[in-house]
Image 1: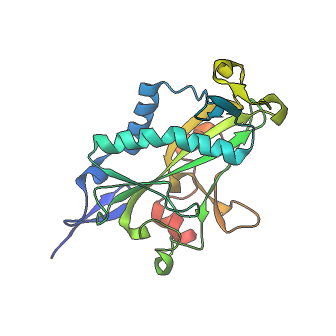
Image 2: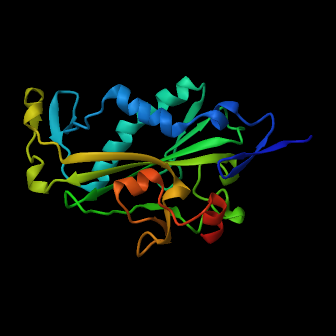
Image 3: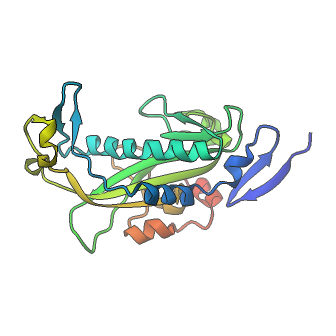
Length: 244
């Protein structure tokens, strides 16, 4: 059977009966930014609530705050998928990429990967930040295309990063008591000044490792606009993959 090879951004996608038109044609960035506006998100997340109405402040641990942003993202991703008639598969383990897979079905060869990344800044202005973008020793290499990834790497047509950059409050500012539901507004939000960007992974990738003790791809070190505009030194996704 002949397949029609087309250019999707810098990804080469082969059309066959297992390629979803919905995933190929959708603009995830535009859809997610639209959802942010529709929901008018304030990121006013303060505590975990138990069934009997007790509230436990979140604290300022970055692992907890990362989970908060993933939970805020989750329903928006499901809404986008539903609008395009797609299914969502969430990562089956903590070390499996991506956080969300959008697809027509498991046989779809043009799946969309969506990964949530977070980091915090210390100063209000003049700051630059960076992220880690996954291992460079696993699925991006053809002979390891199934390692630590929900589906084989070549089953994905797009790889999107939703990035959250926030100002983190000190632990002593985040509440240290068990509260009642009526006291919700008295619990401090443990972060502030949240900025969001959506960009293809390769367009924010840098040329150095992203962490000292693990084999992770590092992003560019840049401003919010650098991430929103895609400040990578790479000219294409192929060049990015060849480099790493």
